[in-house]
Image (cartoon, rainbow, N blue to C red):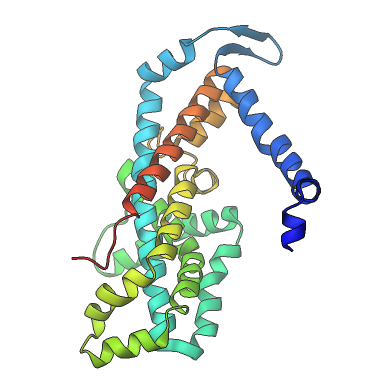
Length: 294
């Protein structure tokens, strides 16, 4: 193995094809998109150099501001929900259900493999107010509360979207975090129990620090996925009411492919890329804390 890894020609043969495919699929389109960000026009009318005009437009575009705020708010709330729900389920699997958790893990993971459109239609039926009253409004009517138009206001539409995405993905993060929790040595846990640690003290001082690397991996995975949310919004709210639930990805798509403003759409894409990089760097910086201290 050392002989193979020490041979540059062998490394190029092993890594070269994958690196070439990655460059063609990922790097080349990224550089191409960056070039479009400094132009105006489309494939039919042609492209003209516009310099920093698209970026100046970004600063004054109110739709970009509202989409950016929605994207950040959605990413923070859903990431917290996904990781906390996943961690709670992982603790349940590991320390309470143990070997009996396989069936529950399968049930909770099942929504992950469902098509996003199917989940969106399901939640539309759950929360609909007309022409038929959905199950959620039916329950409210049973306790004397009038039906709510969940998709008629920005606040309620946002929370329905959050609930849907947390429910749909918490099974994935539960399995991911479960894999980290089962690697904690049983001897360490037994020693902590003998020293009097149990319940929340055991979780806070032993389990959380030892599972912190996989926890932070889950946070990074989740925050980058939620910042780039697209299909969930399109399937459930379509960005409405108005532009209230329109993330940067959907606005970028509309700008580029509905209004054929490829240059401005590329500038929005660049803004989203920078946002993802900055958030990832912040999470990495925070993850350097030593939870075993204090």
